Image 1 (cartoon, rainbow, N blue to C red):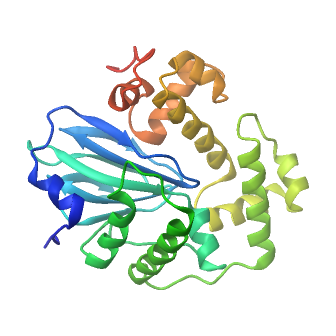
Image 2: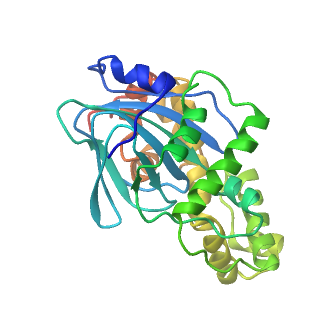
Length: 291
């Protein structure tokens, strides 16, 4: 059974859902993206991103495919999507869908866990009032930036909740592998707007490219190549929200051409850059929105 909501979320349920589909983004924070989305019908095609996606359904039924099964989330239930897991999403009824979700970079959880592996929550939809309350503490004030001290406490609480649902933990990684993965991640983030060669990461980490790839995926649940690609796409989303033309965004985010950019954007977020621009209100150059 879905749990009851409190505060701002409950007030939102008492208001009628808007007819227009849209996405509203919260002020940015290091490693955390927060949005509210309202949709009717199928919203996102199959896609995957290298962050956790953890949110609360506020209105309607959220229907999505995840790990080989169709999932349904009712108002008050929590959705937990693990990094790099393929999924889609949309409204399960004609009433439409409203939800709030945060996208969390795994590195924030890893820093909190002190070397323990990332928790994997097998149940994509959970009814947990404590977890819901922790999420809404970050998702309810959507118009406000999150204070640094609040974020530290929020991550600690979230790690505890996810650990409760994560089941048996794997063996912690060795310090050498952990350090190499962290060095590679920092280097990729600092050089996200250009092509990074394997030789560079080998020089930075002291590991060969194959060992590094294994350790990186074991640590962050994605590959170095995909991590770099997602940093470019996240930059592109910020430029879209600022209203920049899509053709210029493709170049600024480090893609060879707009078709290359469009293809990767859709694979990562489940819709085209033009459609995203229309939903967030940054419509400059959004001529591919209907495609």
